[in-house]
Length: 252
Ligand SMILES: [Zn+2]
Image (tube, rainbow, N blue to C red):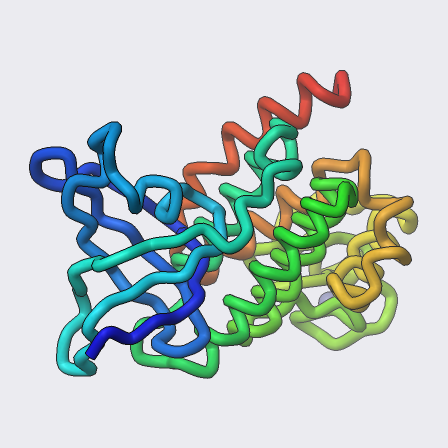
């Protein structure tokens, strides 16, 4: 009774009169759906605690046979103000949250905990002012690896030859020139291969290594989103908005 836990708000939709359904990722219970009555009223005390992409303390009566819970209280713990004030950072956060939501299986607590840690770390990096595009590339790569769908970047994913020439999200990673021709995938420059490999190998742990080279390049993030769409069946609706914002902000 009256369990309290810290969670991150991944998704929110209107529910009944003045209410909302809130999807929360947390370390204790994994991914939960909370019904929050009256939170769309101006006078609601819980309104600030269910804002998208914030970290909050929630109170519910947990029962492991259920998947939806009535929210009792929600108190903000980290609003990530700086992240929300920056349009590129906040739209990157939306892409991360959508990926975490789609990849977190309700019945796998360990995997949910891993995605919670990755998402919290990514939001903290955005809040600290790190480049949103580099953080996005790093966290998407880390999430794919956590979900067992990490890109193969050491050899051709089809024939295991070492000399890579192209990247194929559909095939799962690098392709050699022969396999790329067979699959109809265009070859890319050595620089692009090197950059993509570095992002996958470094991840968020080594953001300082990839930040200088991944900051201004949308291609890596696009390929990683393709991985999610093709291998996890995720729709990634938030990505088209991110692309528009990125192009406006960078003039690409
Ligand atoms: Zn090959």
